[in-house]
Length: 316
Image (cartoon, rainbow, N blue to C red; front, side, top):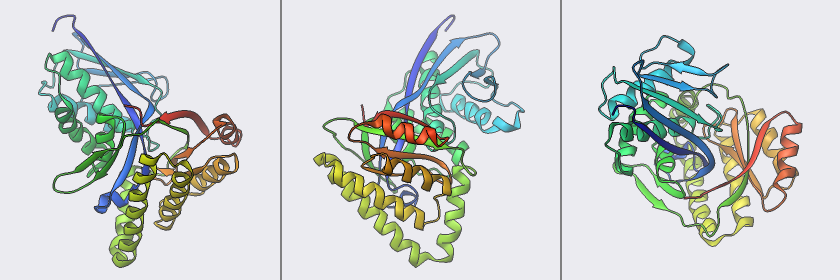
């Protein structure tokens, strides 16, 4: 392994339909994002160490059991990745993670983190993993960040493309073949808490009113199934209407925020076919489907003070 260098990459993701409801057994639809993270692993006498130049103020350097409280989850995720690929806690490896994926806004940064570093570490070790191995290892990393993840994020980040996902004793994963990648605009704002906290707050409401939320989750599941048909048929008008409908249900679930609502409204007024929050909500990201002139949607959002970019989703 002396002087050995290995590289790997993983995309971010957007949930098109079904976030939150997927935790309760309903189907969800997610797609790989046209931005992601790349990882480089190389032998180092000072390892194990992980450097992320684009995160934190002035970059981030962590060790598997570091004491930087702000980034404790990153250090623990790094430790989980080492364990998942059977590397010792003192492995002589230095990892560098880079890319254009914003941290902690619902675009799959933790899943991309896990998948990219697991792939790079395994390749550096000389034992590359197949997709099943990557999924199993990345799942250990996701548990560090989210407690009880649905499995959706690291599944789509590992496989790429677009897929239908339904949680169960054995997850049901169905690839969705798109004629062309979907043109979208993604925008985001700082989130109010973590995914784990958003899921826990919704769980408390579900426990207080189970029958009500059961019907809401059923409705979200029906939208997701209709979304699969719209994706396969390439019906952008129907797809946009379903994105809007799913957003309304998520708002009813209490996981939207004033910032999410403002971003969605701005995107629609600027010409988006449909728009919704994506991910855990409570701030974070939205995804807007654009048929043409995505720059108008980006401009409307950035002029209002939000970060935004145009890209595609669903590429394999």
